[in-house]
Length: 90
Image 1: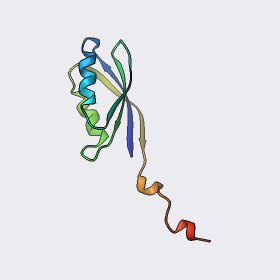
Image 2: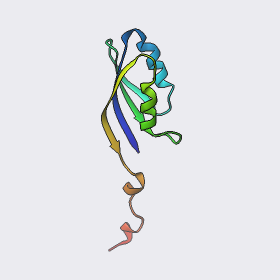
Image 3: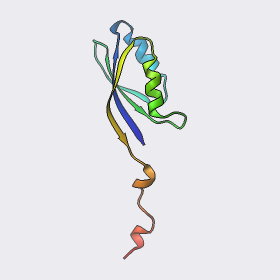
């Protein structure tokens, strides 16, 4: 599991169009917006694309001024699963 929290600054006059473009990407969710063009976005890995690749694509949306990674969490799900033999050990 790979989760990236980002603050995207968008030109206010194209904010709605830019937000619609962001939502067109798999693994992207918008969690908050401000009238001055700030957008809080969460980006996750998808089976087709890494979160880092999606973030680079978000930079290319017309009107995006900047994108800053503000939070990152990576967890190997295979490592967090309990081992089957762990409950059998005495």
